[in-house]
Image 1: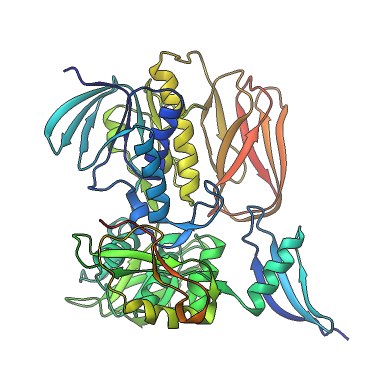
Image 2 (image 1 turned 90 degrees about the horizontal axis):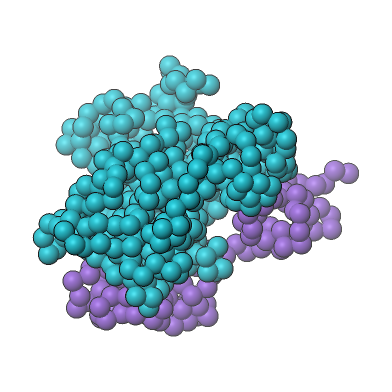
Length: 412
Length: 122
C-alpha cells in the first residue's frame, strides 16, 4: 500500500474544489480531489439560476459557471481529480478505501479535507400522514430532474417549506409551465433569502403562507391533493383550519442535513447543534489531520461562503501535511442567548484575528452581538446589527487574542 | 395632509447590511426610508418602478451525451420580458460543442441583451 498523498479532498463541490485549491496554493505538493459523480461541481451543476459568485468573483453568475471557473483553476494549478470514485471508508489515521473506475484501492493521506456536502430532509423524516403516491419530491431532486434530465415533474405543484431551493424551484416550475399553487412554511418567518422570496415567489404572484403546513397527502397512484392547515405557536396544526389544495406534485424544501457518514467512520466528534464536525479555528476536527468545510460542516445559504471555508480548510490541511501540527489545549466557544450555534467550537489559546460564524435562533431586530470571556467577563467583541435572520449565516471577526472560554450572545 | 401612500417594503440586496427600505408616494414623488447609503434609494426606486431580472433555464443540446445546456441572459431585462424571452429560448436546439459564455441568441427580442450558455457541453 504505497499510494500516499499530501492532501486528499473528499467531494468536488464548491467547498471541495476550493479546499483543493487552498491546499495547493498553501504549498501542498500533491493534492488529490475525489468526486463520486461523473463530473466535478457537485450541486452547482443543477443550480442553473444566478446569484453565485457575488463574494468570490464580485459579479453574479450561475452555478454551472461558478463550478467551471473553479474546475478550470484546479486544472491550471495541477490538481489531480478523480471523478466516478467513491470513498467507502475513512479511518482516524487517514486511510481511505476508494471504489474508483479503476477498481478498489487504499489511499493514504497526510491530511484529509471532508467536503461531502449535505442531503435533503425527506417526507419520512418530517412524517406527513396520508397515502404514499408518486409525485412527492425533495426540491433538489426535482431540480436535478428539471435542470439536468429535461423531465417535467408535474402540472400543479405545492411546495412545503420556504428554504432557498424550494423558492428557486417555485420560479423554475413556473418557467416550465407547472402551476405552483402555493408555498407553505411551518415557521412564522421564511427560511430563504430575501431576494429569493421576492424574485421567485412574489414576482409570480405565488401565495406564500407562513405558520402553515401540509397535514395530509391524498391520492392513490399519483398525488391528487394535499391538505394544508395553519399551525399555532407550538407549531401544532389548528383544528378546523384544514383546507384541501388540488395538485399532482408536492415538493419538500424542509431542511438540509450534513452528510457525515464518513466522518463518523473516522470517529470524528459531531455537534448536535450543527450536525457537522466540531472544529477548531483551523477547521480541524477531533481526528488529527482531518479537516471539514462547506455544507458537511455547517449548512450554508451561499455557495461562496462554502468555498471561502474550503480555501481556508485546504490551506490548514496543507500546513498539517507539512508537519506544522498545531498542538496544545483549546478553549471553547459556546452559543449564548438567542444564538443557535457558533463555529468554530474550539480555539487555541493565543489565537487572534479569526472568523466566527453563527446563526440566531429567531429573527432579531436592532440587536447587539456580544462575545464575552466566561471567566473574566471581558468583552472581546461588541457589534450592532440592524437585523439578524436564522436564514442568513452570520460572520464575526474576533480581533483580541483569546485566553479563555467564550460565549457569543445576542441582546435585542 | 398625510398623502404619504405606502407603496412597498423591501430589503435592499446590494450588500450584506440588507437595509429594510420602505417606499412611499408623496406629493414630491417617491420617498425611500431606511437606507443607510445612497445606493439604497436607487435600488428601491428601480425595484418599484421598473424591476429588472435575469432569467435562467436550460435547452436541449444536439450531438452530445449531455442532454441539456443551461442558459441565462447577459444582463437583466425588464421583468415583463421574462415570459416572451422564455418562449424564444424554448425554440433553441444548439449543436454541441457549446462553450460557456457562447451567445445563443444575440439581442433577444430587441432588448439589447444576449442569451448565453452557462456551461460547456462537449
